[in-house]
Amino acid sequence: MKFDFVGKRIWWFIISALVIIPGLISMAVQGFNLGIDFTGGTLLDLKFSRAVSVSEVRDALLPFGLEHSTIQAYSTGNMQEGSAEAVLIRTKVLTDDERRAALTGIADRVAPFEILRVEKVGAVIGGELAQKALLALSITTLGIIAYVSWRFEYKFAVAAVIALFHDILIVMGAFSLMQKEIDSTFVAAILTVFGYSISDTIVIFDRIRENLRTFRKGDDIEAMVNKSIWQTLARSIYTVLTVLMATLSLYLFGGETTKNFALALLIGFISGAYSSIFNASQIWVVWREIEQRKRATA
Picture (tube, rainbow, N blue to C red):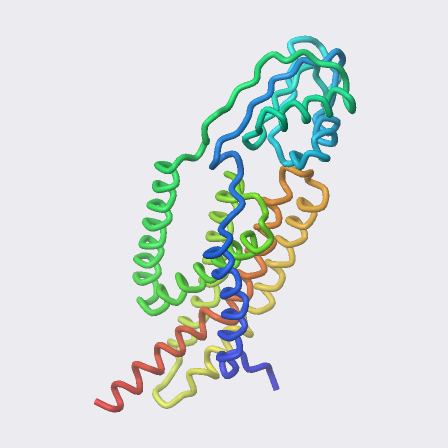
């Protein structure tokens, strides 16, 4: 006998709640560890006495907790690939003592240098841009509801959007709990998860729509939805395993600057696969059954 995805829906909803609630509490209590893209920071422009690599400078910043800083090597001469005599470092906002300690550490661990520029810079993503991002997300959500309602039905659209925000809340809650730094790449990861999750959900909804064409009054709606999930399950598993292998490789071998981006994708893709299989269709079934009971009562 095949596994009953729909009949055990209350358990899937409970699991989702148990994962989401701690994240919501963390977001309310300790908030997020915002990166320099949101908070601004300190800019250090250094010219070294020899060609240096970005990894050398990053390792030197590690003892000061600045290994996630944005580091850009540049040169006006002919240098070996991956190295340059000048480096532009953008860190969180540093006090005078913190800046002096970091510069001393770089000089001791890398090479002597000349300070070309030291200045404080404003946030790349300010309040206005954050508001525009939320506006864009809202417009996208309304567009998804309109399109899915047109292609399928309104209940499908709402169920898909609920599953989407389930995934977004899990990613945001995980980053708040772990206090991982949030920067512009995190925003890109959220949008990527948004697109992946809706596409995976639509595949299952499309199969349900096809099976509804042969669905007759009196048939078991839960059995039909279970059948639809099983028909698309292999495709969902193959897809998520493929993207997870690529994302895990990025997380393990992509370097410090891409770790948080890859981590957000890993959490989001796993959550997206879960919500598509265990939540979205079940929400639609619950809604449909409530409507049927209302009609029967009337």
